[in-house]
Image: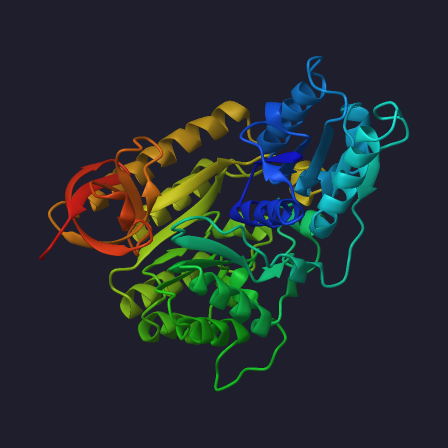
Length: 453
């Protein structure tokens, strides 16, 4: 039985895409290799959002493809955003590379890789002699191909892709070039996918999209509700699903109907990952982010009024071209004002062919690093303080399985998306259990199942 190994870099959408590719291999008779040394097909699903992710993937694939001890029949492929961005250029950078597949051709990966593998296993043709294959063209309705899941024992949660692409054109971002224009899946297909997951025992689904709350953009309002809110309502009614999440929304797609959904829909979790990127309106304008912080803060206040226990996390870029000390301090003040439960802070990374890459006022690396470190300290202090206040409380935890750090313990998440490590038998996996929090160490909570509150 041939085997495949898939290494995924980047976001949750990449994870979901990799699962779809793995499903196609497994359903066609392949096994999933534990590591690249055991695989007949080695694939990397790549990210192009930051330079560091690209370099990491390039270095890893270059090392693997140049191994002298690897069997000659092994197929090496790069797929995803970096494949879409660099295309045939990758074959020059990694001579032993066999396959490059873009973001709208995931459904072609198995056929292409298997064709190469079978050709090598059943012929004397030398490796890489006229065998480069590349698929990066746009394809209508390609977003509808991300629909299958690999069943896993006691699976608690799953990602569901509801749309692909982005039409915002932020000045720093390469995603519109790598993922294409916004394209939404039919609601009926999404609902069928979630019903199948519920039948398999999945309790929680996270809806994925580049700007997820613009799902169904262009569809008429029905009863004052957007297509996205109507989708949430329909998912809320699916028996067996206990929790709904989505990521990542954009302020421009936030109407009162979505705020009100947090008041009306009990399965919608008390957490939102809500990227702000900067606390400076001047920098937001340079970023081509079509909102101002007054609007962002107003939405946060409305959400917390609708759901008082809501946890808000965010993305922030420091060191954007032209960012002054005052611009940075405005971001820091916004963090202190909102009191985020956590924030992913990134130092601005120039991406080829984006407007920001050639803007004047590029920030020196040392200053970017200093601002990153300073803001991270502020974020961490807020998060640690918030988590410490949960000690002694009882939290509803969806148990996901063994803890990665200690297989003798279990790991799960609260509705606020906080990680909890707990004692308990393995059969708790997939269940929502009340857990009394006994300890907090930074971002992780520890506790035991509670019989009473």
